[in-house]
Image 1 (cartoon, rainbow, N blue to C red):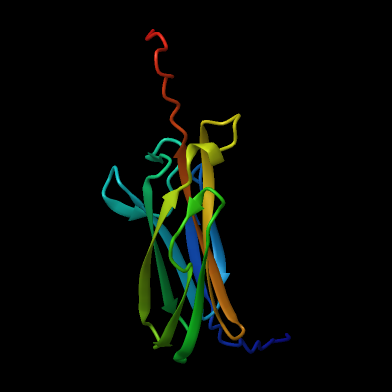
Image 2 (image 1 turned 30 degrees about the vertical axis):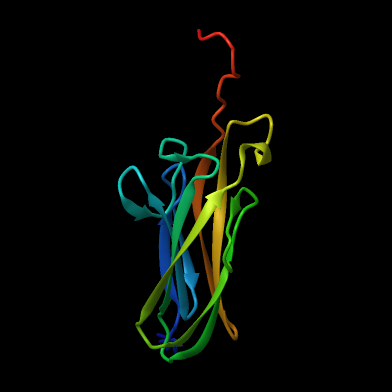
Length: 167
């Protein structure tokens, strides 16, 4: 009888599972950095992973608040982590969508809120009154990186023209 021995290299990666639009769960392996991107749901007054078609829809000029959490799931302190918030075309910010986290210790998590505004109705596609967009957050430190997304839906509200009959 032959016995086999396997040497297993310890893994520093973590696993993150997320529920995608439609209810499907997707699990991915992350490195030593773990990013979680959430959006504030004004209807339920809490941060959530995504807002879909049946959730609150943001209007032109309305503020949308995202939260980016970066966690060190590795074995060493990160001296500097560059975090970039990649906004879709219909979301605008006056500030810098990039920031840096310094000295993130093992097991520690830092978070930052990003406030953006929905672009004007004239920027929406002409053939759609509701558009769902994805906002991406990415964290990088040397060879270690991770990213996460949060979806929001935007609604161009069409108001009747002045003097138009009310039906």
